[in-house]
Image (cartoon, rainbow, N blue to C red; front, side, top):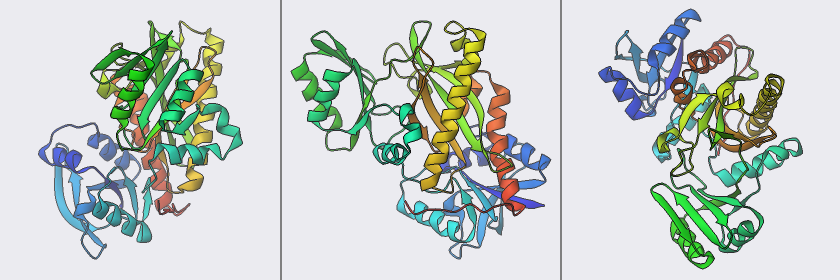
Amino acid sequence: MDRVGIMLDWTVLQRGIRGDKSYERLPYYAEICKELGMEPVFFHPRHVRPDGQRVLGHFWNGSRLIPRLVNVPKVIHNRVLSRNGRIRATIRRLSRTRTVFNGLVVRDKWRVHQMLWKNPAIRTYLPHTVLFTPERLRMFLDRYQTVYVKPAIGSVGIGVARIERHNNAYRFIAFRRNRTLSRKRLMAEAARWVGKRRFIIQQGVPLARYQGKTFDIRVSVQKNGNQEWTVSGLVAKVANRANKLSNLARGGRAVPLSRALEPLFTAEQQKEVVERIKRAAVEIARQYQRHFPSLADLGLDMGIDRQGHPYLIEINVRDQRYSFYKAGELAMFKKTYRHPMEYARSLLAGNGRGRQTRP
């Protein structure tokens, strides 16, 4: 039986060893791989032996992970997200002798924006985005009603600030912060918030609303067994009223997309909106892959305006997928596990080989 490697974050793997649950559904991997005639080998880059040929793999026994020293599988699905140099070096070395999909990529939001902007066909999906400087922030405040200030590298909404213009005053909204300030005080607050870190400024898209609150859409776009990009699921994430963030880790909540769209569009319009989102997601994934050929599994945060036009908010290279579970979309949730394993099966069958770039 062919083996497929699944590299997991250290804390996730340790929970699996103890038999505790995490956002990664290890039984799904085991069940789907069995159906596809494969055996999953779970490990962290630390478990790879210095020669790069053997690894302390972990196998699901029905209730927890059991360790066993085995050969490194030929195909590996990377679910590790780390800035640690040694871990990244191990992943890079593995990529020279194995097929590692969703390998190392650039996560800097500004650089990603530049990569996507190169394709004129998808510019219509990209909100106005620039690197942070005080002068550019002033320009955005003059031009847009709502502006976001975001860390260039970050996730789950950490460090994101929303600025709303209300006549001559501004609301500065972030995690556990909600202050109304004059323009002068806002500029000082923004400078303190950013400090010496690398931030971007992004146009706030006038998002559609559900029950009076804005929502965005998590789109799982993955390669399938035919090695083609496909949308595995879509789910609406409704913003928290206090901090205006839709991230589930910041108080947002997930609901089925159909429920969010129903009050806004007719049944026929809903189908058109969903198709627009899917087309945009696939086009964006294809463009991103031109820079990082190993990509095969992405979670896109997208928004729609009141007319149903889609916008890209952010690309997540390690989609935790639990928004589908929280929304009760269990078929979509399971499909987000199935498609990467079908893609791995196709690579093992010799129908293609992923390549890894050096970010």
